[in-house]
Length: 290
Ligand code: GRG
Image (cartoon, rainbow, N blue to C red; front, top):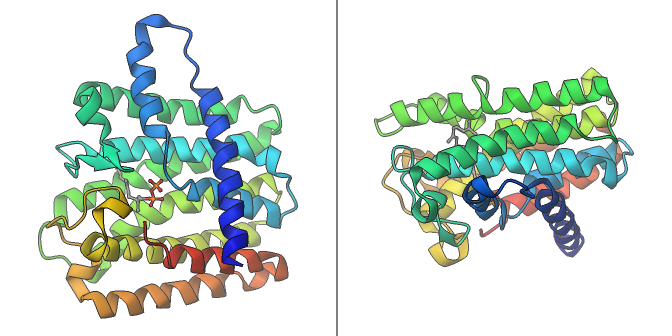
């Protein structure tokens, strides 16, 4: 089964890469440098959020082609967030996806512009998608906009920056992980479900699954941050910043990841056998080494 997921991941990565490449063609020589910076950070990556959109869409019988632009849009938001996260006044990371961070190559000013431009491009990609009906586009844009604003990435990052370096409670760390990591997975999943005309109950199940899966995913990320190999992980590891593992220890973190994983899988019950594939996806995610 892992082999099946791996080959699916490989195919989606290839197709998403093509979508992103097509979305970032420049016809304005003056801003060539801005595109270069944006393209630099949209290459590489495991494309897990795109895969998730497609897996969810497939559960609701949507063909892959119809999901691809939305899946790519989610990856553009993700790439934008990685650029911002690495900036010196944020996480101050020099390495991302196995190469120097965007601001190290292009400068902080350009990196920030590229990140903002990618967020706009993500919304544009959905709005210009001829495969989607207008009401579906509106719902997806709402979900995507929520994922990176006051209800998502920006909120999580704010709490992270302001509180994480201090001794914080489990609840605060969980809030940060929910907003910084789970929120975008949730948007990715909900977008796939919306395209599949899922019911509110089904969308809520996907949302619940994403929340727990995202929380488990972040703990695995924190474990890799503490004991991962920088060459394999492809980003700076062993930061001195507080994270879940440093708060509760490795053993407890592993147990908590398992607890979240079980809750994630339980959330899928109302979706029936078609959602089985997400169980495989969950175990693939928690076993990852990069
Ligand atoms: C307004 C876009 C925006 C952001 C402002 C900077 C910021 C707030 C939030 C940072 C969010 C962030 C980068 C969270 C980390 C999530 C995470 C675990 C990333 C690693 O995901 P992988 O392993 O990465 O899927 P690849 O490189 O494979 O795509």
